[in-house]
Image 1: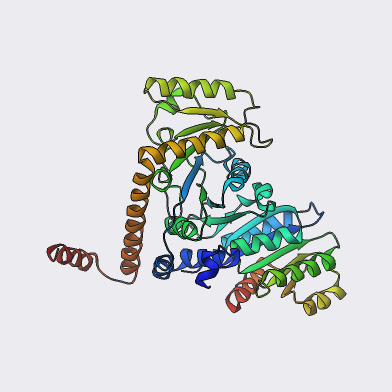
Image 2: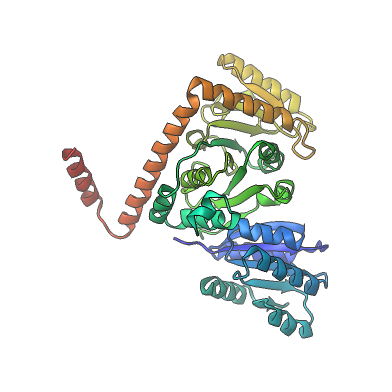
Amino acid sequence: MKKTRIIVAKPGLDGHDRGAKIVAMALRDAGMEVIYTGLRQSPSDIVNTALQEDADVIGLSILSGAHMRICDRLLELMNEKGIADKPVVVGGIIPHDDVEILKKKGIAEVFGPGTSLKQLEQRIKELAEKK
Amino acid sequence: MNRNDLLSGDELSVSKALTVVESDRVAARSLIGSLPEREYYVIGITGSSGAGKSTLVNWLSVSFSDASRTAVLAIDPSSPFKGGAFLGDRIRMNRASRSGKILIRSMASRGMVGGLSPSVFDAVELLGRCGYHYIIVETVGVGQAETDIVNLSDVVVLVLAPGIGDEIQMMKAGIMEIGDIYTVNKMDIHGADQLANRIRSVLDLADVKREIVKTNSLTGTNVDRLYQLLIGELNRREKSGKIEESRQRRREIAELNTAFSALKEAHSRGVKLEAIMECINRLREDG
């Protein structure tokens, strides 16, 4: 049986990992296999991890404000490595106006503050199955 | 996934093949069968949770990768209740990961209780056939009796850290018997020397000769010594025919594993135990 595998990553200089840990535990309890990368991962680290782990979904937790640069570089590297088919979701503090821009660039979903863990699980399951 | 890509060890193809191995046993067997056999070595790393196995593998895998192609399979437990897993071994392996030379794959134990994962035997065989020469397998954090790693590996490192108890703990059967090399990690912490001495005295009581290395997996101190010991041990075993024995055992257990999961699947689909037994009896009579 195929299990859903998801990367939960903290890119860049951002030490606030409580949210990422809560999400990782919730997805674990939803029956998924969560590969937690820990702090200060570069986009290249994350793409390498997603490739080696053959993750179904890549989750980024970003509260630093650097989401545009990080996502641009990540998507670019995913293209280079041939894993552009994997959906990327972003959670954290993303200004309202940036959400649409990120989605246009190819980010599958942005989870802002107030998203319930149920909604999050649901959407990730959908994305993993669609892939 | 293209056969040539697998044979040349293309990472993306190998990674996708590992997913097949983990999710579909029948497809896994035909995939593995389509690739030619190659020689490879399995180095098992086991020990209690928090002893420093992953951090040690972070250094050790780099040493192996300087010699030949190396992969790491890192196993963490699945939840017995929800089936999910939090795979956190990789977090300790940034050095290995950033070297760009080592394939690291996290695996969940998926209901297996012996310290491994149900598909790890197929996974090492696949990696071996894809040209990985050294395959380091890190077990889940083990207690006293999770000793399946012995059946998988050509050589086993038991990683211990100060604070695990007195020599009575070390005289018990099970985990303390399975190390081919003992590592006392966290050598900078008080009690490391005492632990090494206790292991030595218990091994002496049993008249067993084993190397004991003290390491610090944060700084990498003495990891090279451990690597040299492992290479020496593998060479010795190759010459004495022990490696061939472990290959044989690995093949047998892999077959048993596949048989067991086929039975389990049939059972879960409602095939009655009596019918399974009858079928086995008939096969036996037919020779």
